[in-house]
Image (cartoon, rainbow, N blue to C red; front, side, top):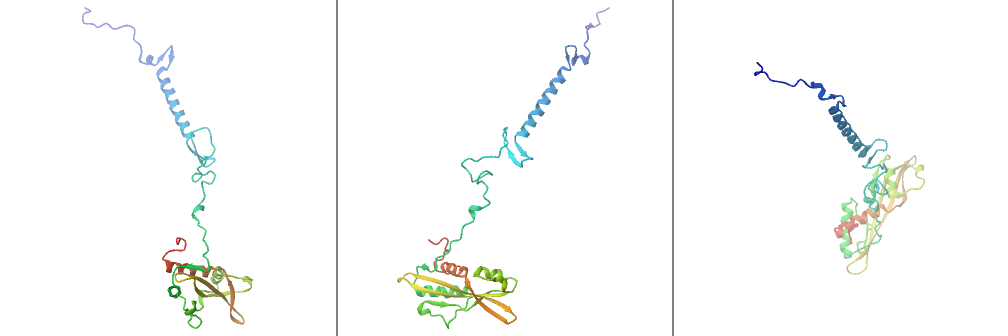
Length: 238
């Protein structure tokens, strides 16, 4: 009568006993919990080793040192030494041109170039005082600035003004005199002089005062003349 019956073991382990046993409390969940804690700890350590230090506002490396980076002998990058120069090397000091300046050209060609540059700079040739046969070219007075608001600052750029606070400047003008002195048949010295004047309007009327030139007007005209004769800027002209 027992042929159709299946015999099972009388000892059956409950499902909960697979994880809860007398020799180990929650054996498998404990291993998973330990692995999770190790993963979280490694992620936190990596995040602290490389990132932004919010206290010191600088990037730190993956080490125990928190000192700022040192480039050693290479100082053109980074934040140590002269790594940051804020464009210091880009500012090139402006070299003053020699006055008189030697140009390779015949005197008649230079005199024509002087007249052309004056015309381009809106200067009118003064035929009454100019002596082209002697190499002397003079312009008429040119008003480069007018207006009481802006005259003072622009006048200071072209002239050295003494006791400036005692006057109210309303205009500024200059007269350019160019002299070409031949050295030989192929070159000559060119000298440029500027006569600077400032105008004041007071109770007694308008008055033009002669001022000492700073050399700015002379340098500007020489630069334009050199470019017209050589086709190059003085900074690149050998």
